[in-house]
Structures are given as C-alpha cells and as structure tokens.
Length: 155
Image (cartoon, rainbow, N blue to C red; front, side):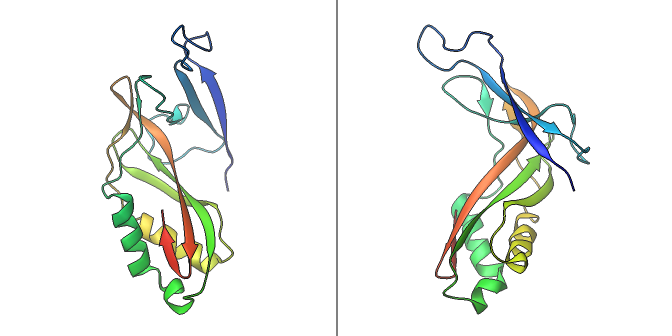
C-alpha cells in the first residue's frame, strides 16, 4: 500500500501574471513508496495545462471513446449486471519514456470485482506519449473518471 499526496508549487514565484493568467503552476506528487519504472520518484507531476504554461498531459494510445468501447466489450461484470450504475476514477502513472508503469482505482466503485476488471483493461494500454514540461518528457499521473449507467461505461 502506498500514499500519494500532491504538493502545489508556483514555478514563477508570483501568482497571477500581468495578463491575468495563473502562471506556471506545477503540481508534484509526494510519493511515499518508490514507484517501479518511473524515471524520477521525486518528480512525478500532475500536469496542469493552463494556457501556454508549457505543460502537456500524457497521451493515451487510444481515444476515450475507444477505451470506453474496450471496457464495455471486456468487463464481464457489467454484462451480468446490465442495470448497474456507479462511478469511479482510474489513476495511471506514465513514466518519462511513455510507459504506463502503474494502474489502480483511485475512487473505487461498489464492486471489487468490477474495479479489478477495469484495471485489467487499462493495464493493456502500456505505451503512451509521455507528458512534457517545456518540451522535456516527465513522469506523470493521469486520472481518468468514469461513470456507469445501466451497465455501460462512459469516460
């Protein structure tokens, strides 16, 4: 088991810029236990692409629609529970090489079986485009929320 908390750092040192934007805020995860496969456990970012701050989120090899199709095709729990409704969130860690090195349910559903099946589908998405900060690839956390309505998953 591990705990992850976020530390928000203002990289500019000055809050709002003269144009009124939020500036270059950087959120760094505080990793309590090492995450195998990341490039730097001290610098795992929660990317916040605000305006032109140079932050770009990690990109999945599939669109959200394609991931939802995979989930709806492969998650057998929902085929047996067609009236099931719920919500949750998946947390992925994508390293600076674009490899998804960790996947877990961040906000659990009411079913451990369902959570395990969702994680199994996301675990097939191993190769990503790494997040970048000012053009430099970085380790990052990716959060993907989902809802389930009448046995169908939507991202």
